[in-house]
Image (cartoon, rainbow, N blue to C red; front, side):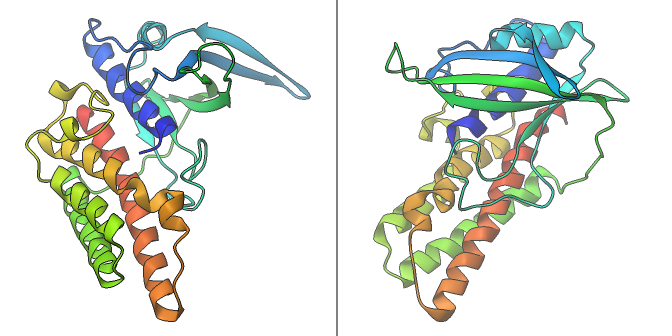
Length: 264
């Protein structure tokens, strides 16, 4: 799973936990934030030809408190219903526009992230991130998706198909990666198997959701350059493209549903 998406998962999940228990914290030492110099939250106000950025919070915990005091009930992570571009998904900001919905009852606010490479100073903190309130009091269309169990099964099917493809084409490196993803989706402690082992507040999620997070982190290889640079001939290329695109869409849907499952 790429870093900007992992951070949105963390913001959504920890934010929801905070809205019910203010002892929850997400600081700049979290695995999804420790490469960031700063994380700001602003409101974007446009007046025709000009626009203004109004500061709202300068760190995730301040943002959570802003949400709580502005009558936000819960947060939901969203991915475009039409899907995203797998080829560009390896890059920060690529692969389809993810948003965070701040639900206030009858209306919602929409938040989007913007990442800027800022390598000056601390060489370990190279990103400056800004989340903008881009739509306020918006009536976001309700889209129903199959439940967590459905995506859990679909991931197993999709990953297994690509593992078989990798075996058939003697892609040894990728065989191991897809097997690692399958191991995650069967693990009793799946988050311990990935770099973002603090991705979500683990006690708030059921095992299937945590298995999905871990498996999707490993299977994200289908959106990475070393997988996307593969090339085959004729029907094999068509099969590779179809299986890869299908799994990428399943991964994105599964991450979204798993993140939002804290609300069910």
